[in-house]
Every structure is written in structure tokens, then in C-alpha cells.
Amino acid sequence: MSSKPSHRAFVVTEAKKGTEQKSFFHEVGVVWPHKSGKGFDIVIHDGISVGGRIVCIEPKDKEVTE
Image 1 (tube, rainbow, N blue to C red):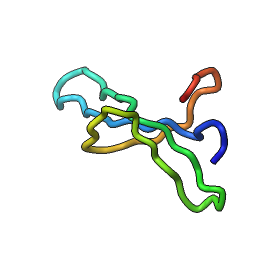
Image 2 (cartoon, rainbow, N blue to C red; image 1 turned 60 degrees about the vertical axis):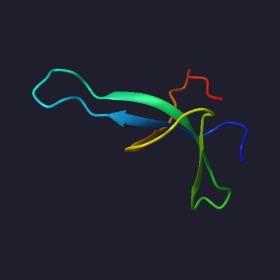
Image 3 (cartoon, helix red, strand yellow; image 1 turned 90 degrees about the horizontal axis):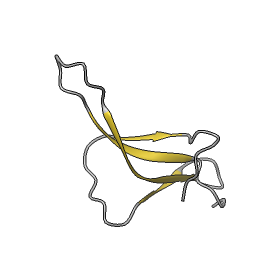
């Protein structure tokens, strides 16, 4: 694994239909690509229970990840 993750992992809570609210993205972990390039390790932060849809997004240039 490299020293920095390639993506951040979020659980997405969808906004209620009929409202102007946006979906809420809650960061739950980070993602590292395998050396072979054929897969990923998703590491969930300690103490978090995860359920639902997980979205993996590349971090913005200035964001710091664990």
C-alpha cells in the first residue's frame, strides 16, 4: 500500500423526496488501491457502524486524509 489513500469512503444518506435538502455524505473510511491495480482495500474508521450505500471519492488536492 502507498502511504496515502487514493479515495475517501462515505455512507450517503439520501435526502427526502419532495424537499430541497441535499443528500448527506458521512465519511466512514479511506481506500487504498492494490499494487496489482485490480482491487482496493477499504479501511473503515474505528467505532463506526456502516450500513447502506458506500461511495468512494478521490480526495481534493488540498484535503488531508489519514
